[in-house]
Length: 87
Length: 321
Image 1 (cartoon, rainbow over the protein chains, first blue to last red):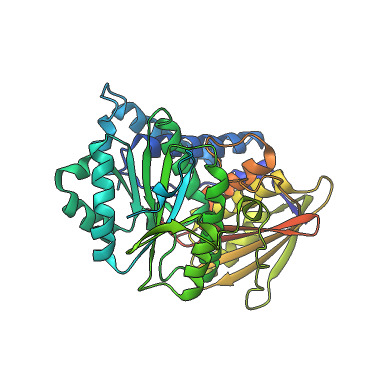
Image 2 (cartoon, each protein chain N blue to C red; image 1 turned 135 degrees about the vertical axis):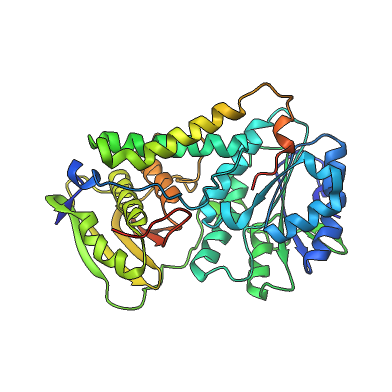
């Protein structure tokens, strides 16, 4: 019998991508998706009082996608993002 | 030609687009896309990268008005496809018409993936029943896919488009069947599983998975993802006060994990929503779908079993412990 406690979820994780995650995407919908994914994962870990290294990988990816969101959040026409190939 | 003009009432148009090879696909789909672009309708094309390139070459400058997605990447887990269509539909909700091409089924899909991709096709009818401005064509390559797959396409799509025109599918099973499907039970993987239980003790799930993950070729991070997925599903669907049985099989390059005796999720779209759900069972499945390469859910009596598939490294994985 085992359990998910903070120590369990506090492991150091590195920063590989999740399935389907395309790091060079600049599509706004993709960006919103990955921000939401990493917010959910980091938030779930918070519920276990996980802190420090445990969350670092997901937090790093969350910072990455939030940064990308800021990069592309410049004024554009309604169709501004359509001209960008997604991946 | 499509079948979409066959009904006057506005409704979600979900159409199987049967084609014979990539050239036929481009020849028949390009005029549809060009008409949509000319009408300034939003267009999203989610097919494989080879067909994306062919189509972009054919469309020329019009291709810049189209959003492209490589379905083999974003749709490898079919449960992640409805959310990107949902974002597309929501973003352009006020448009007169939206056009999508989405090819979730291709030759070479693993058997478990194929079943889930077919389930995805069924669920599209439910997910977008409230999107009358959305026209989604699902390409099926008749030169590559078997007769059984094509038969199922007729059952899951109300409309069929072929080279000689479009029509309603006489085999379409209807929305009620989409809600309560007769899914095949999960096959028993080969070999003896490792079994343990998740309860109230202090043992370490990840350490139990680590050895098997390493042997299967998973890196440390993917084993962490799997650990988190187990935690998320157990948190959302586990029975209070009941130890959660976990069974683990090792396959080449992957681990399969069964979580049994779970509470069943009532919503057939659980785990496939956008935005991410707050309800706990759906949230657990939603996170598992992001973390895993494939997630299979089956009702068993009054409960449910969830099977998680996790393969090795994605980009950037180091692979060491």
